[in-house]
Amino acid sequence: MVGRFQQLVLLAQQQQHYNYGRCGSIVRTKTKRCVVGFPVWQDGYGGGFCPKVVKLPPLHASVSGAGGAQYSEQLVDARTRKRKKRIADVDQDELLDPTQLADPDSCFCEFNGVHIHHKVYNAETEADNAPESQSGSQLSRHDSRKLGLPMILLHGFGASVFSWNRVMKPLAELIGSKVLAFDRPAFGLTSRVDSFLHLSLGNEDAKPLNPYSMAFSVLATLYFIDFLAAEKVVLVGHSAGSLVAVNAYFEAPERVAALILVAPAIFAPLGVRKIKEGTKTGTNTTTEGDESDSTRLWKPFMQLLEGLTKLAKTIAQMIVQMVMGMANMLNSWYKKALAAFLRSALGVMLIRMLIDKFGVAAVRTAWYDSKQLSDDVLNGYTKPLRAKGWDKALAEFTAATLANMESESKPPLSNRLHEISCPVLIITGDNDRIVPTWNAKRLAQAIPGACLEIIKNCGHLPHEEKVEEFVSIVDKFLQRVCGDQKELSAQAAA
Image (cartoon, rainbow, N blue to C red; front, side, top):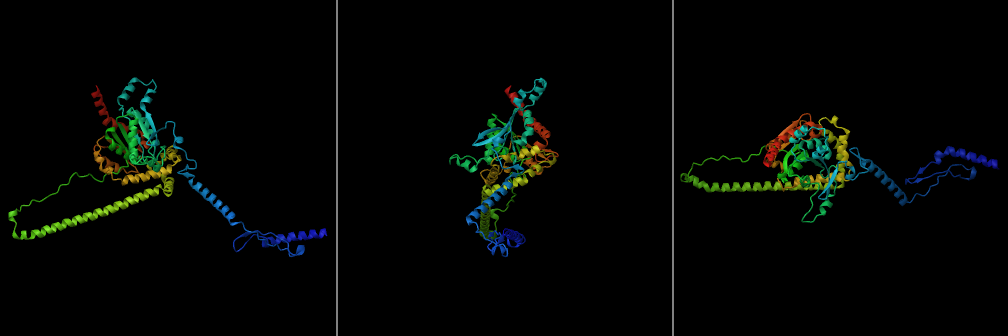
């Protein structure tokens, strides 16, 4: 009996092996519910040995749905982390407070609720620490050329204090005083603040400025003039920093000894404005007594025609003003809508995409010879992307720039360039692909007495690409325009 049972079991296993692919595979019903099949003997041990498919009850909808949703969320989170992982080849998973990214010589000060990152190089301190082996004659010759005027450096869009690293020391030694550079809000290691929260802290009588506005940067510049305890300073602005320098001059011209504009991103006026255009008028030789009868008859009609002409001109002017007003209103709405979009999550995402795609490429484009661009320089430009809130701050800065363009409280800067009375030096490269050289030439023509210097084989960053030439040009300019003032001051004091 036992032997018979073993034979039946062996035969059943063989039959199951041959038929399992046909009868025992996993089956999907019309409702796409997954069932599991396994062999069950029919008709005892001696039946057809065809495995029977047994349908297991499906999982409860809440259980299966929760599992699927959880898996989907994990998949989306993984994809988001993958996209968010790097921007311009900078890891975005662990962003830091700007103070944690500071250099050993970095300094921070609070101005209107914003912690501003800055660096100061003091030539006087360095001179005190100079080796005694230096001869007295060399010191006296060097001291005789020092101007004693502090200098403030203003970086451009997307740059920071880092862009001035190579020229801070030689410029400080040149003027024999302090050279200060600071990061404007939204750039470098200056703290990123929420503009809405910042503005809500003030009352209606004294609302704080938007930290990302031009007005804030101008007041910060004037604050650092007081910080240096200086009556006057030399302002050096690069690219968009030139806008800050010129606006700071108009805010307090008595505090600015000279302006040095490097590849200035200031739109020059298209042509020289005429003071007044004269009109030629003919002389009427006809006297009242000479008027003929026909003239007296037509005179009322001529007066009526003249009145209708004036009325038509007035109506035309009103229509033109109305159209221009509507255009300005639409333009204002457009800018406000664009600013609101930039502050949204979608706008911030767009900022991140643009920086990721064009950030490093823009730095390479700014150089005349991108092959000379080292990894250290690229890392210096991308380092601020490791700071918390860099993307939102950049979106806020762009929105504030649009708001500043919309403001009509002051005339356009290009219309005020002829009012600048301090010495001005404009430096640009002959192959600037960011701000064309011809714009610098027009700018030099628009500013009275401005001096223009064009550096050959140079791009948008003369103070980084051509350090020695840049410092030499600044030296000659300051000795020419400020050296005479120093001698006059010394004679007056004597």
